[in-house]
Image (cartoon, rainbow, N blue to C red; front, top):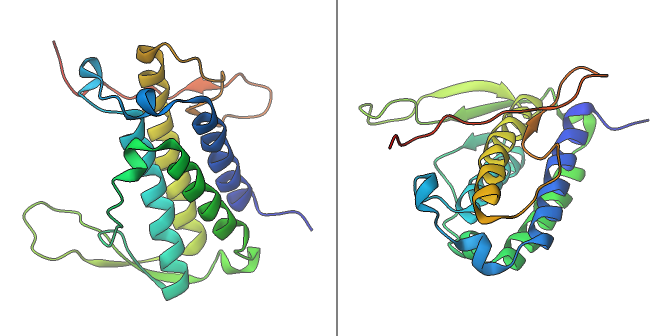
Length: 180
C-alpha cells in the first residue's frame, strides 16, 4: 500500500529543505538581506518548521494551537541544528498512519489583531498537514528569492507549486513586502 499524497508531499518538502540546508553555510543561512525586507533564509526556514511542529503536536493532543510555538532561535542561525530538527519532524510525519488523516482536530489560530482570544475551528489531521505543506512552499519561494540575492543556486522546482502532470513547474513568487 502506498503512502497518501498528503504524507508523501510533506516528506517531499521536508526532504527539499534538508537538501537546501546541506548546501548552505551558516553565514548565508543566517544573513539578513536588506533588499528582501531584512529577512533571512533561516527565519523563513524556521517558520516552515514551526508549522509542521505545531501540526505534529496537534496530532498527539487532538488539539492544534498554532500560537503554542517553540521559540528556538538556533533554527534561524544554525543550519546544522535546523537539519537535525527537520530530520526529527520528518520522522514524525513518516510515523503518521494514513488512516489518521481524516481524524478530527480542534484548531486554534489567531485570526484578528483586535480579538483578545483566538477561536477554535474544526479541521482534520490531513487538512492541517496540507496547510503546512502550502505554508512551506510559500516560505521556500521566499527562500529561493533570498538564495538568488545571496548568489546561491536552488533546484528548478524549489519553491514551486505542484502543477498538473506534464506541465513545467511555475515559481510561486511572493509579492515584495517593501517598495523602494
